[in-house]
Image 1 (spheres, rainbow, N blue to C red):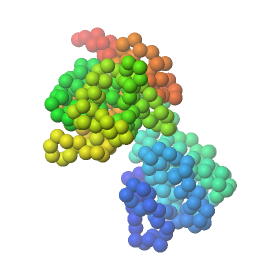
Image 2: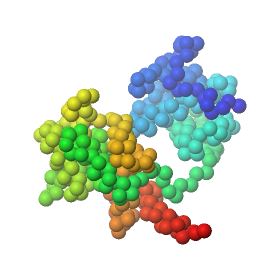
Image 3: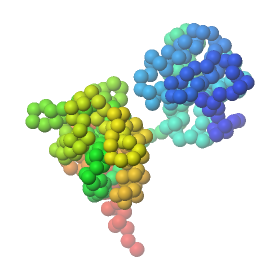
Image 4: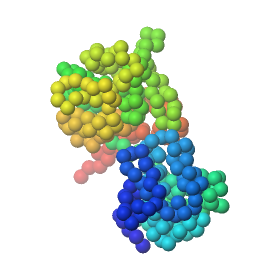
Length: 339
C-alpha cells in the first residue's frame, strides 16, 4: 500500500495527463481534474466545481477541501477505480487507514469529512446513486483542551511594553495585537477590518468584526485598546479614510504604511518577530491571543457563557477549549512533589 508521503499532490501538473480538463483553482495554480471525475460527463464536472464555488464560502476551507478531494480521487484512479460509481466503502476505508499512518487524527477526520460531504453533494446531483463514505468511521478523537500556545499575563504585558510607540509600524503592531487580545477575534477577522469598523457608540468606541460563517460580531473596545487604536490612527493619518483597511502593510524601507491590508501571513511573521524581541520563548502565533484573552478573562471572574458570546462561538464546548485557567493549578500541584 502506498505511503502517505507519496500521496498525489493536488496541485501537481503532469505532461502525460495534459489532455484532461484543467481547472484554475484560484490560488495561483492550475489543477488537472482526475479522469475518474471527467469520465462521468460534463454534468459531473459541473457539479464537482459547484460544490467548491457555491457550497463552501470560506476560502481557507475551500482550499483545504479542494485539495483533499482531488487527492482522494487521484488515489482511487491509481487503485484501478475508473468511475465514481465504482467507489466502494472498502476503498474509502483503505484510504482513511492509509492516512492514519502519516497524519494526525484531526487531519484524517477532515479528509473523511471532505469525502463524505462531496459524495453527498454528488448523490443529490444524481451523479452517483449512494454515498460509500457513510459506512466508514473515522478515528476517534476527543479534545478537552486546545493546543494553541498562550501567554501568561506577565508575558502579555512584557510584549506590549516591548513595542515602543516611536514609529507608526510599532503603533500598528501594538494596536493589532491588542485587538486580537481584547476582543478574542480571529486574525482573519482583524485583517479585513476597515477604518469605519472602529466606530463611536455612546461614550465608547466599538469594533465590528466579520467572523467565520459570515457572522458580523460587534465588541466594545477595552479602554487600553481604545488608547492603542487612537494612537495608531493618529500616527498613520488614516482616521478619515473610512473605507480603507484599518491595519495596513508597511513599505520595505522606512516607517510608512501602504494602502494595502496586511495578510494573515504578515501578521504571523510580525508576532514571531515581536515575541523574539520581547524575550518570549513560547512559540506563539496569531491564534494565541484569542486563547490568551479568553483565559485572562476567565481568570478574572469572567463567565464561560459571556466568553462564548464575546468570542462568537456557537458552542460553549468550543470556548472551553481555550480555557487554560487550570494550567496553573496543575503546576502548583506538581510542585508539591518533593525529594
